[in-house]
Image (cartoon, rainbow, N blue to C red):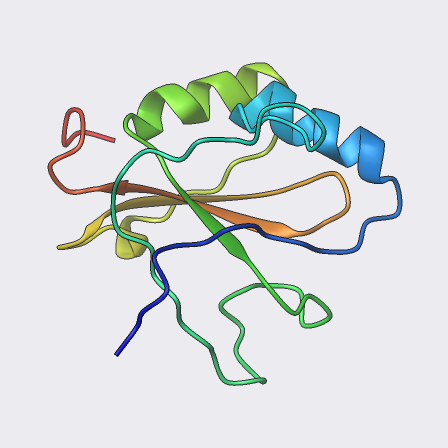
Amino acid sequence: MEKAQGIGGVFFRAKDPEALSRWYNDHLGIDPVGGTPWMQGGGYTVFAPFAEDTDYFGDQTKQWMINFRVTDLAAMIAQLTAADIAVETRPEWDGEIGYFARLHDPEGNPIELWQPIGRAADTA
């Protein structure tokens, strides 16, 4: 059986696509469309539909949440908070697969950051 090899793109509607693209570039290092596409580092990608009534994403009006793998969650959190971006962490989110944090982009879309176990220091 032929299988998909990875995520080729994430496409979603935005009120101000150019401003939102700049935000993702400035704060998460994701190159905007139009130049050289963002090259992901190797690692797992989880593909998981959730029940339509889940509260895992927070705001019930949001239909998706993107999860970005990071190598140093503590450094990413420091970078984001220095830019006055609220980042939430909870001890119960951390476990056998890694460490997690949550934030929202300027249009309120939920973002999860994930430092898998074995990446950088296991002290995030």
